Length: 471
Ligand SMILES: Nc1ncnc2c1ncn2[C@@H]1O[C@H](COP(=O)(O)OP(=O)(O)OP(=O)(O)O)[C@@H](O)[C@H]1O
Image (cartoon, rainbow, N blue to C red; front, side, top):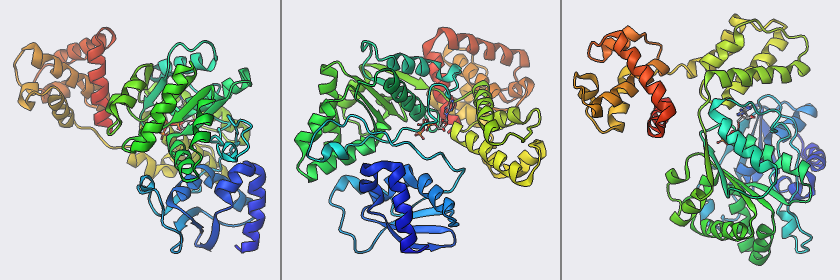
């Protein structure tokens, strides 16, 4: 690709991403090289490379492809003669980032919010992250594992009186936190266009903060962040260990709560479990409603696949999918929704390429690597070890004959997890628990099923253990 062509492409990107995004993120990209399907760009900082990679790479790939360039991947590198990065907090990023050209994502819709008529330029710079048009409540599938988070998100998106502040949504990778946050933002924009809703990642918050410090525009920064009606910060764990950013976040947070403005936060774990988060920030986060997005269950995964299928029907009207394929995928791919979605996208792309029906054989061929990767088998012994560690008892006490409650309950938890997470039969599980009868195992499994409903502690223990085992 020539520099001239990149120049033309940039103009097209300008139209899609808008002036502000263009000036901040696209203009500084220097096209360096295109070889073996990898387009290399020089960027002034690692941070910037990461940001562009995360937020605009799909769009850039899309534009490259539409202009006839064959590019599979983008790579962002800091040119050797770039000035040193001035801020220590940026030092954690990696040098080269790349994002595979997956299924082409619809170009994102840059949404500028919370910009007051501030004339000094920071308001302009304070453009929120783009909201993904696909992430709405309509496309969010609700199931047991996410119903509480969904209900809380819905409530906040009504924009009524602030009843819980902040709302903290937390959960593992790819379970729908960002999707729910975008859905709230879309809904608020539609119902209450008069509200200033600002959605951004914690990383962007830090970047804006650092930029304001560097440009001596802290007053503007404070003014802007304090003038929003709804502040949404995604992936807040990112600011852990970054002292000055945490401090500023803390003050912003307090100022907004004092004015009764809604704050919505997401994190990859419960606030209490985020390491290197200052106590005062942690306790503020814990003050509101903290809800957990649990790992998906089979029913939710199937629901998501069915909903995606509806969406794909538009793009691939002629494709047939055999009975049982979605069930198979929901059963076999339990890692996270992103992987599940990726698998379906690939399957459709592949089937349309070869012009065949999506049946089990094609599925297994096309997704062999994904299926292998999610095949990690959890063993009975692994479960017994984790459970004994968790309850601080010996492995022999889990397996052995002692009937003390302090051993019996963990034993039942372990049996329950063996039934849920392995394909072992009840008699086999019984054998591995010191030769117990299958009816004993069945009783244990049922007991935990009941207790999960009535005893919050047991429910939490089981959930924590399940996560640890599936990690
Ligand atoms: N319940 C759901 N219904 C429909 N789609 C879902 C659901 N949960 C997750 N997804 C989809 O899965 C993908 C990953 O979700 P999302 O980006 O919101 O995850 P996340 O929890 O923010 O993950 P991360 O911690 O990696 O940022 C998105 O494409 C999203 O639309």
